[in-house]
Image (cartoon, rainbow, N blue to C red):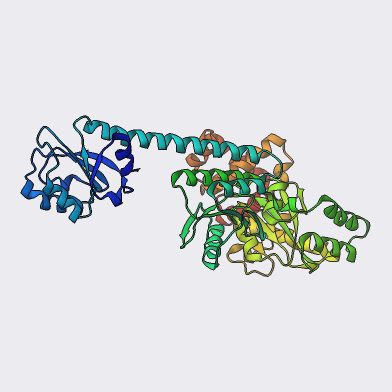
Length: 487
């Protein structure tokens, strides 16, 4: 919007009423000669008229109506109808505290509109330049030394306030400027950090406005950017804060980056030289920043869209102690890590895990065996399992280790066939059983003719010495397949 005094200065307009209100913002310039244009107004206009339909004795009612409609000011063009602004109109505007400008014959109504549009365009271009320069500066800073803190400092300088990046999961914070906020902002920051989807919050007080926005970091949740300043300049500052949040998400260090390599190396060396020693306990506790020396083994597999990788799981668990065992990943976490949060983070990231009880370092072999058994159960039931937790359904009634041993023996005759043939037969059996013996559906999924499915099922019956028409046999083989393929 453009202040009214801009029209006065640019066009040399004479002020007849409301000289003390020339800072009023003008949203739009509107021309109307209607006796009552109020129903066509939205508020904030500079309303221009030449008085073609205005009777002097009706000025008081006219001004009252347009004032009630939210008009910011009136502009009256003298000649050809009136040689001067009607005194009745001047008196009515003074009585209603409504600014009134005299538009001289040499000044066209169109030039008034041009002043507004020109200023709006200039302001918009200025904001675009300001946004572009700020974004470029943020990107340059993010690519330079100490990028995280310097990006926050640049953002704080841009808004004329402060900026804070929070990692609520690991209790880490980085700041630019000097943050000023109370418990209400801290609570809002916590809610945004805890949100599992993009979230934001805006809070205002007598001396500042605070914006909080979630940040995508190494873990699924836990990060937010808070920015506070006496004044936020609207869309431009919002866009700069959004850009900064995106950059900071890329700059956030993984939890494992916070541990110096030499400290992790001491742990590994102590374990290699003296497995289960008190020195290993002490060094490992130092890495995690905890005093206890009891640990859990986590065996996990990416099953629900999770990104399989050492770095991904290390970041997720906040542990540098991660290794790979085929398709399964093994990690060591301290007992102090909350189990509910651990399983929630794994689930949201698409991992299924077996998590052991807490053991001292000298008994980590037992913890590993326990985690392996729990992972088999977890994969069978489709969700992570923690030691001691109650397991529901069929998984609770089955001994997964014995089921796997049985499955290996049961399908050995098929595995002893030609390798490619065994794979086709096992795949056909799995699909056929899943479709409850429906030949056409199984053939469609496998991309073969139904007679091929019939032939393969006959080979399976011969090799395994069974009849798949028997429901008990089908159930037995289905469980055995689950053990082989998922456990």
